Image (cartoon, rainbow, N blue to C red; front, side, top):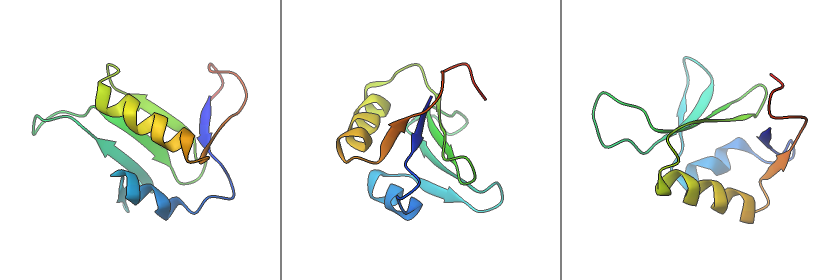
Amino acid sequence: MLKIKDNVDLKELKKYGFEYKVEDEYYELNVCKATDGFNGFVIYKGTRHIYNYSACENDTLDTLYDLIQAGLVEKVGEDNEI
């Protein structure tokens, strides 16, 4: 599983297009063009785990690559762990 490193200020995610959702305490990047859909990533404030809710759209993969290249992401545990 991928997560944002503990030493990263989560506010940095805003540079990559993420919006903070106060009520649920997560950052989301929605690249879906439809007004009623979601296609992107969610990063929960508590765990910092990155959840992919997309069909691997190029925009979401580009953003994930940018986060990795910036040194903000690390791999932890196995993909099937919650």
